[in-house]
Every structure is written in structure tokens, then in C-alpha cells.
Length: 77
Image (cartoon, rainbow, N blue to C red):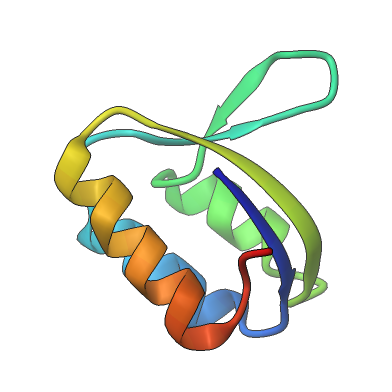
């Protein structure tokens, strides 16, 4: 799933933290970073804005949750 122009990282990470399974950021080189990690969240939240995020989700309910969030906030193309 790709999300675009997230301007409220705190709200985004609140939704990520509600997910039951892993939510991973997929980097351009294919490596993955656990977005439920507090350390990762603190580092990524410094700017507070994400122009584009490629996510890997492993739970159908989590996909629905993040998709509903993205549609509601217009962060998905």
C-alpha cells in the first residue's frame, strides 16, 4: 500500500499502533523497517511529514484499518 502526503505523523502512528500485526515501511532498496517500533516512530516523526510511504501489511484487518484511514484523510492515490 502506498500513502502520500501524510502531514500528521502522530495521527498516522496512532493508527499504526492500533494494528494487530507488523506494519513495515518498504525502502527503495527493498529493505523493511518496523513502523510499530517506538524508536523508528521517534526518528521518523522529527519532520512530521511524509511525502510517500510504501507499506507492507500482514493482516487483513490492518489493511482495512489503514485503508479506511488513508481514504478518510485523502492520503491514498
